[in-house]
Every structure is written in C-alpha cells, then in structure tokens.
Length: 386
Image (cartoon, rainbow, N blue to C red):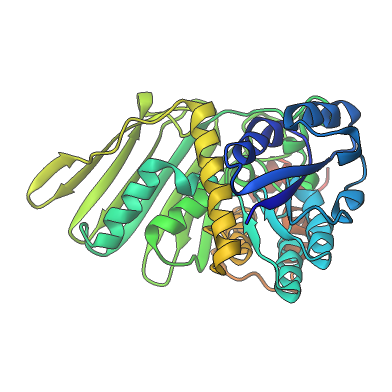
C-alpha cells in the first residue's frame, strides 16, 4: 500500500533528506502535503516535492485535517513536537518524528501515550541505526562472536556545530529552552547507539558537561556513563575536533570501528572494523563508508522504508516512541547528573522538574554552588549571588 505523507517543517533536514527519501521509494510513499510557517521555506519545499499551491500550508493543523495524508512526518525543532504529534494521533495519522522525540520527557511521554491511545504507529528518526557498520556490528554481537557484551565506548568528540535554516532561527540549538540541551541533545545518536550495542536498556546515568565557548548557554562537551542492569557504556560527545570511533568489548573478543582520521561519524566516513578474539585480529568485511550527504540520505531512506514495513506488518519500527522516550530521559539524566554530581536512575520521576521541564527544570533543583554547571551558567543557572 502506498502511504500518503504530509511533512511538517521545511528546514534543512526535511528538504535535504526526508523529501528525497520518500521520493526514492515511490512504491511505498507519495508526498501529498507540506506545512511550514516561513513562506520562503514553504516555497522551497513545494518546489522540491513537486506539489501544487493548494497542497502546502502555513498552518500545520490544516495539513493534519487533510484526508489525503496517512503519515505525518514531523521535522520541526523538538520543542514544537508535542502538540503536532498529539494532534496527528488524534486525527488517526501514523507519525514519523525527527529526533529527539521532544525537548522534555513529559512532552515525549504525552506523545507516546497519544499514539498508543489512538492505535497509530509512532516512529522516531534514529537513523544511525541503519549505518552499515552499525548493522554489521550488531549482527556480530547477536551471533555471539564476541561473547557477552561487557562494555561499549562511543566517541563523537568531533561534532560539527551546524546552524539551522536561515529562515527560522539559525542558532536555536544553542537555546536550552528550544533545544532541550546542547551537543548531547543534538547528537543523542550516541546515546541510542550505545544502548543498541550494549543490548540492554539504560537504567542509570552519570555525566560531566562543559561549555564549548565561555558564555554559551548550553554544553559543548558531554562525557557520560550509561549503566544497564549488567553492563555499561561510555558516551563522549563534543563540538570541535576531538576523536571519534566505537569500541565494543565482549567476554570472548572485541570490535573496533574506525573512521577517517579518527574522526566522528557521520562527518568522517567509516573506514574499517576489526574483530579480535583469542585466534587473533581480522578485518570485518564491511565496505568503506560514504561521505556525509549520501550516507545520511541512505540512512533516511532505510528509516522510512522500515517505518512503512512496520505500519503494514504491525511490528514496531526500528526506533519506536517508547525507546526514544528512554533515550531522551537518559540524556536529561546526564544533564541532571552533571549539575548535581550524582548518578541518576531511570525512569525519571514523573513529578520531578526535569521530567516536566527537561534541562530547564534544573533551576528547580538544589544545584550546589560548586557545580560546574552552575559555575559555567549553563541551562539558565547562575552562580549564587549573581
């Protein structure tokens, strides 16, 4: 069955990747509507998707009311996701939502509950799951080749600080209220990849964060430990020029994923994967990776195809809403840990300020003056007496 797609938000990720992904799967998708409040972005979207003027809307609610839309693809900034997803679910539309699922766990939970109540599928764009080297690594893990996974290290310390579309607010990712955090929130790809490779849900989080530039309101560096019931992962993410790569240690061996010049995916293409066991070290047969644009295009295509199959078959998509909620909670827990200097358990208490307000809720906690988060004036906190 061909699904009719309405895309809300005509920013860079929508026009550069989502629209082409649907166009590359004409047997499964037809784009029938777009919505964006910015006239120039809406016109760019209309032209790139080949729609007529009556198929594009400044008001997303007009798109949701259309009877020729089966799937709503939400590509807006995360603080705008909740109302759109809840309304789409109420309208009986299946939903594919860009990551992170929301800026606050309370909003994300409301979205998951709305989709469950309406009986529609809520999938989230955790597209790095479809990178070929990640697929190959998980296949080797599942085969038992390296035994029981003991720990995973994901380094993404060379993240490029990309601005948003000029027609909206190019620096919205540096606004903690809008983005929900800084580089860790923007690149929580590392969080869900770590959980995917450690093969257990995260239960506890501890972290250190710091600004990349003095005076910035969000973190540019996050060093995190994610604990499961029996295993642990380290996730290190930062804007700048630091190293990248993935290391997976098991009871019978290890996998090491390397990227060009020890760089960070997806800016640095995948280079090689080695498997080490008691018999020695060998290179795993995985093709060298693509450059940024074709890599993301291929992963988005795989994401939307997986979503279509999930809707049609009744199975869960690769990243269902509930999993994305846990990824978001783990990210917010990292901020909370960094502020308080303690390990934070999941799920977050639903009546707690960080569940309700995300990183902005840190202002409602007793954050000590010695906290580096307070001393750096991150997330709206200020040193006492200032």
